[in-house]
Image (cartoon, rainbow, N blue to C red; front, side, top):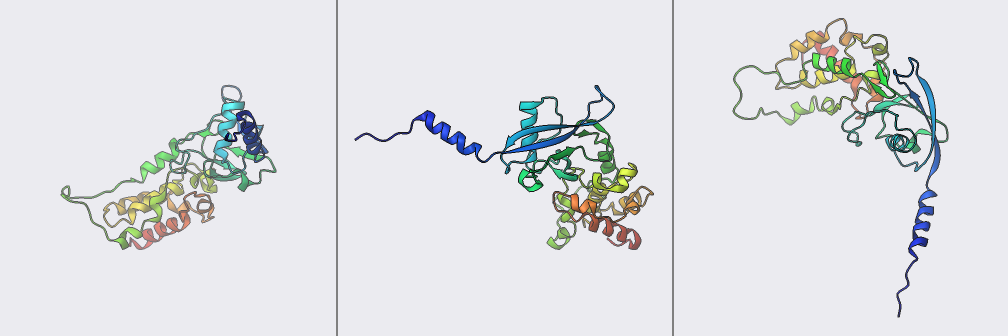
Length: 257
């Protein structure tokens, strides 16, 4: 008895048709900027067939690889860990690799542009140096005195819990570039720098808390925060950024941390 088999071409066609049935037509409206061509930015539309369960980063890849190789953006891990693909999607700061197309109303054009408050170098790429300089300025490392220990510095679970939330920062700049104070004055340290200072100020093993507090007590420091909660809303890791900033303010007043 012969075994029934499917014609390979027919099976492939059926599979292609089934796959295509899941695709929808989406328009991506991307803010383009190339200083070698023009000093002005402009919007450009790209229309493509894509599965709505795909991510915005997948769509950007498809545009770059199939429609316009000059489209420029940053990305690395594509899993929400590196933080390099932060951008404004439909007017909100998000990670392109974590934003599903189906969740952002694909029936209308999806707008994609660079994050605000930092100089745009090309298309969706901004100059991150001011952001990282503020991060470096708050001394984001453990400061201790005395001899080098011969064993690990132990810490209780309760002490670790005190600053656990702010250890989640991936330096994507989504919080800082959502802050209206930072938009108006790039000298402000910004939420991300304060969050990373918080992570060490409240670490029981650290001895540099006073130094960091004095840095953040500067006119461009923590007192510039207007508590708009934009930063908390923008954080892709769910960090309570505004709460952390308020705790640093309280520590400055009470000198208890």
